[in-house]
Length: 301
Image 1 (tube, rainbow, N blue to C red):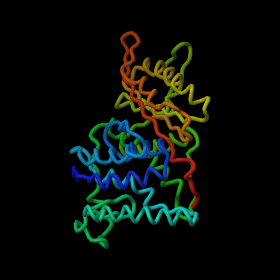
Image 2 (tube, rainbow, N blue to C red):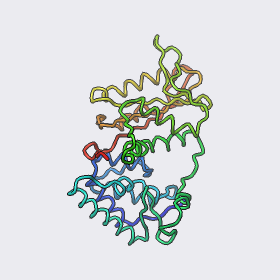
Image 3 (cartoon, one colour):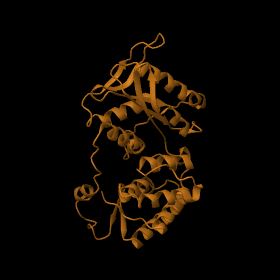
Image 4 (tube, rainbow, N blue to C red):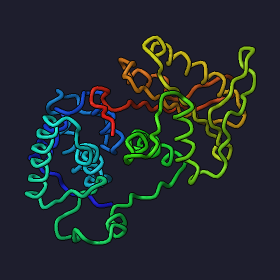
């Protein structure tokens, strides 16, 4: 895997620009979905993003240019509709292009950051893409993790489509489930949606997705409002009780989509992680939450 050291000056410019365009939660979700390594730095808004990018350039297991391209894609490829905003956007875009050039890099549309001279601008796009293909996931957990991290970017592509094309909106759990199912289908042969669990506490429930060959369940939640946000943890705890008595389930992935940022402490969902036991039956729980882009910066096309 290629790791390109990102200079502190480059990370500072990118961080400064992005911190003026999106809120804290939206940028947190963007960096996580883009593959930024580790936990978010415990720093103030104006310095957090440059430090997280710099860290990506220091991690030998990370393709830092791919992370940088993912982080920049939405900003660089999506000009605003308001003239005053567009003028500021062009100035900031030029700042980024300039600092990239100083570091021997160049940005190409669709989130590609490539060293100058490595390819020509008019080289076939297929050759460009071939250089940026990430490592193939080796386990089903890696497939799920990469897919979940990419859900927000996949949603953005389908929501902001070409002029005249029908746009898709992700407003409930079924929308998220359909997208997740479609993205997992090429990787996992047997995905069973809405299979019932055995009875627990006098009730049975339907699993969102059961992957029998991997003894794995995926449960999705879409946060509807602030009241629902307060109950998501309790809902997942109840789901864990149902799934841990399923004879074919040994791992549960909990995926929480919070489009309006109603969950005030998403890290609290991590308390559900770990091994849950009931008698001799155990299930390992992993959780992942993500939000939509900053609602104030949504713009029609």
